[in-house]
Length: 189
Image 1: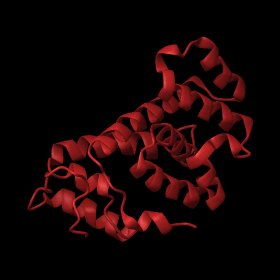
Image 2: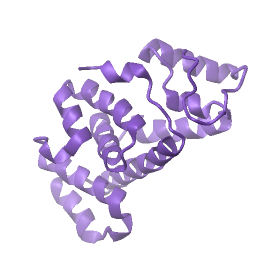
Image 3: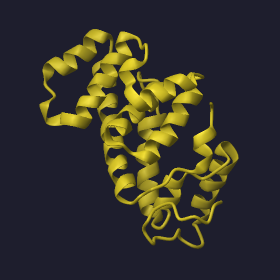
Image 4: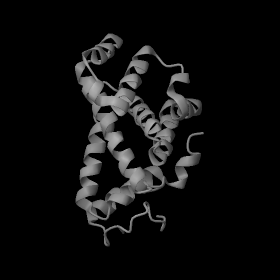
């Protein structure tokens, strides 16, 4: 594990890490080859880490009509609007991995509208972008456009929650100068 602090704040990880947290970090090392800096950043307070990972895991990994790739696409589009270096890097790598298409990952980072996407995904990303830019202006026609594209009301709930989650995490990452793990930059290219 790197000794470089994950943020500009002086908030060292709990030492020692609770056994459950240490096991979770060991699983990350085994599966990812690293402990993502966002987890290291939260590890100064394991209650905050548990809250973050619980919500992340529910939104990004639980069963949904929105695929894992589509949820990662939302993360990248929201992060692009917000110019969040950490999330663009980490979730751009996830899009490259899940799609098997390094070009798609780059398109979503720079301008998702240049990607040739099915209408259903265009509707999803249009909505996620509006959640990011002007959530108070979302009205029934915005939700109707998602339904017309094939999304269920449950899917709309998930799309809205994933977009809102990344708006929050983008702001925390930017405000604390959270840096992505160097490994993300070369993954799945």
